[in-house]
Length: 329
Image (cartoon, rainbow, N blue to C red; front, top):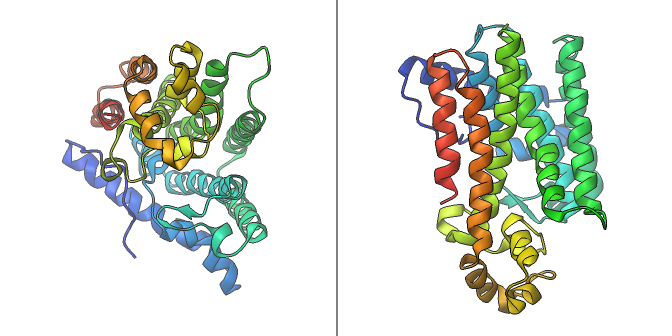
């Protein structure tokens, strides 16, 4: 089976593009084989999200980061699979918590089977990731454990919400850094470590990848408000319907300068009010503030990337920064 769609990032250097394509194919092969078991049902449900596709964004981060050492080092592909399995396992759990009926255009595992099957499948993917990780050494195991701790803490903080004395915007950005940015940071660190990159390169890549990850999620926030369905691949206003207070919403609520918009955004927006809420939010200064915040995270990434060795992968990371900005509109 061919590899699923990946981030549409043009790589100018032909040799790098081929290396990345080969790496993605190798990751895809190991990813699929790593969840196969004698139990046909376990194999089926474990491959459910793998076969649904996805951008393999984290895999790309591992492979690009590995270019700063030996990209053919034997641990690079297994390391990328560990990251992807961890991400996929978290999606099974996320869909249960969110009661999501669809994931990547297909029925979610909890909708197709039930919550128990989805939770246990996520656990199984984490176990398979740990099995691969055991061969990569204690340092990688520790990084994975610390990353998973941040990911779970971010999910807990998102579930509970900000404390009474906590700034909701700072809380939201902290959640994004932990829940989304941490695993993408680990992707960069894995690629650097497993390829034998210098320590300073590893640190720069980890910081840059985390910043890119937060910016990517902020781009999703903006797309949910500003884009057409055809542009974003999902129905505009999905977060509003679900009552998710993304960054543009938080800025609008903090401003409190539109009583009607404040009333609409106080909870899940009723279907008949979604278009009005989108119209008001698109015109609100909170959108510009959210775009500026995205730009600030991208600038952090660029600052670290600028200090990397001048190889084609550096240009690819800078192109990715541009892509994150451009995709947000």
